[in-house]
Image (tube, rainbow over all chains, first blue to last red; front, side):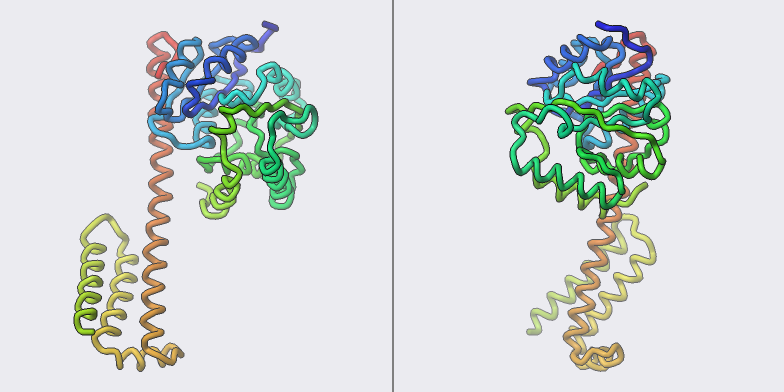
Length: 230
Length: 116
């Protein structure tokens, strides 16, 4: 394990990921000390939290399922309480590569930006990305560019790194997947410095089955327009 | 026809009673619901009156006025419920988050990382 800065956390959101979360955390903890890895279990009905705990990482558990955005906000609150200097957000479904964590974090730690946003379209093309998902992701990028005027190529990529300043300033009111668009809104509203970092994404049988359906884009747009900010 | 009128009026009376006695609805919501229901009851009992009232609003037929009032009532009730659900969802999120963080603090203060 290379030298890991203290008080930099890896935040892993999990919802019913029992079949894969152990392997994902084994990969993460090969790069990161377990005490600096936080799993927010979003009310899983399976043993995701137990499997995570068996890896020695920190586990914070929602009593009921709230959604990806709410889990992220809980994780932010948790790491802020523990004086985090920066945080990397990583998914528990096995789509992302733990080896990419240092690369996503690097510009934030070097003070080059407040938010580093992973993009699956700037480097190695994602494995197993089907055409409809590609169209939806591209449409999300256009939507973000038009509504927030932020030229992100992959705004719904969950692989991101945040400085403490960004974590403190960003206000998330969207509990579900619309949080990703909300982060883009917050970056623009707060004038945070951002940068895209190429990351690898590999869709697996599990992640395709578990992940958001392409029609979920309609939910996101509905949430953005129908759920006012708190 | 009379049977239908009785059923419709009974349904409206039950709706008003339910709205006034159950839950914690605001007085302004109650006034809107009672007023709209009253318009509908008048339209059912005294259909000719609705023609007069409809003309006051620039509507030709009384039945159209009743339809619009019914539509407004439905829209209003759905809107109220949606706002209430949204508020409750926000409250639930806050409570669940606080509980999760509190449990984590407690577990860590006991000397071990948070466990489920």
